Image (cartoon, rainbow, N blue to C red; front, side, top):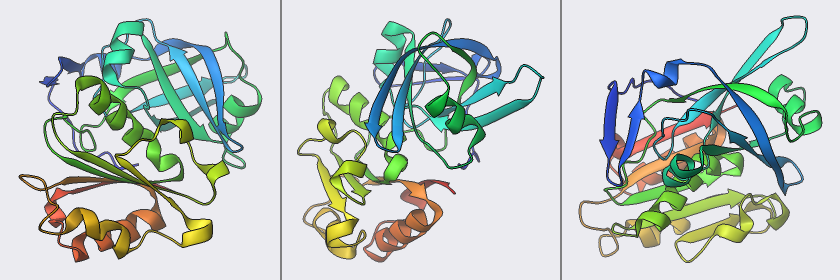
Length: 250
C-alpha cells in the first residue's frame, strides 16, 4: 500500500464524514463479531471498535496481533464499510485474502473465531480517499476491490449525485469478491475467459462523448502488475496522469 499523504488533523466531506487524525494514532481493541466467506480465498471480518471516529471511503487501518510470547505482527488492510454504516454501528468490515505463509491473514483465516479480539489503529492515509463530490472511475482486481467497495457503498447510500463506474477484474466467477453487490454501475472482467483489462473496456468511459462534467477522478487498486497495467491504459486513453490515484500490494 502507498501512504504518501498525511491528512489534516480533522477534515470533512459531504455526508458529514469527519475523520480525526489524532484518534487514528491510538490502538484500540476490536472484537470479531462476524466472519463471512466471500470466495475460496477471501473472507470478510466484521469488527466492533469501541471508539471508531469515522473514515473516508478508500482509507485503511493497521491491524496488530500479539502472540502469548510477545511476538507482534501487523499489517495494513483496507476498510470495506461505507462510512455511514460504520458511524452508526461502531463496526467496520475488512475483506482479505488468505496469503500463503501470511502471519496475520493466516491467523485470521484459520484461527480467529467470533468473539476473539485484535488491535486496530486508524483510519490511515488520505491519499486514496474519495471525497464523494466528484465523478469516480474505479478499477480493481482481486482483493483490490475492497477500498473501492467502500466508495461504491457510500455512493449508493448517499444518493448518486455524481457519476461512478467500477471495473473489477477476477479470474473466474468463483474468485469475484462481493459478487452479489454489483449493479449497472459495474463491469466485471473475467480474465480466465476474456483476458485481462484492455483498452476496449475503458473506451466507452473515456471517449469525449462519455466523459462526465469535469472528467473522472480515477482510483486503481490491485497487485503491482495490475496497477501498472491499468494506469498505463488509462493515461494512454486520455486520463490526466495527475488524476490517477493508485494503491497497490504485492
